[in-house]
Length: 153
Image (cartoon, rainbow, N blue to C red; front, side):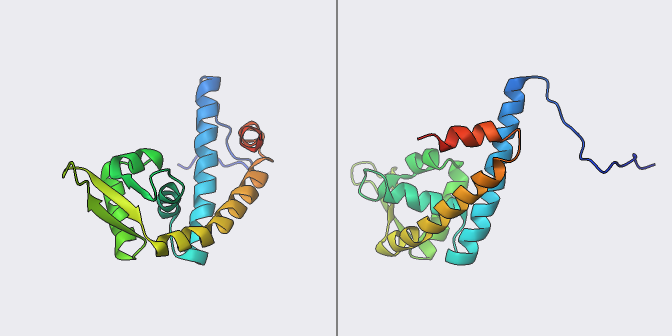
């Protein structure tokens, strides 16, 4: 037998304020990541993870290259997921990999000129969608305090 349905969504109250705030942060991130991914794919042909990697490389003080573990920590992604992501970026000519000259075990990812062009073009979309998503989330009482925190200058 199916449980009765009500026109309202069920209310979920986690056992502590800490857990509730953490869940709210996860909801906010998920909502924004989904919106960013849709817009970046539609307008620039890249995912939000690809944008994050390209932006980290572009804006790092390493001259556009980072050790793969540093890049994985910056995004953040698991090492296996990062390897697949870097392979996709490399196939499309947005990055290239090279081994550290002093430690052959060290692998670096370097952004290409084409990668810099893509991230520069995609940044306006990224910032616009981020701003609009935060504005929309500010109407949710559970998310509004988080939005306020991110909007502080």
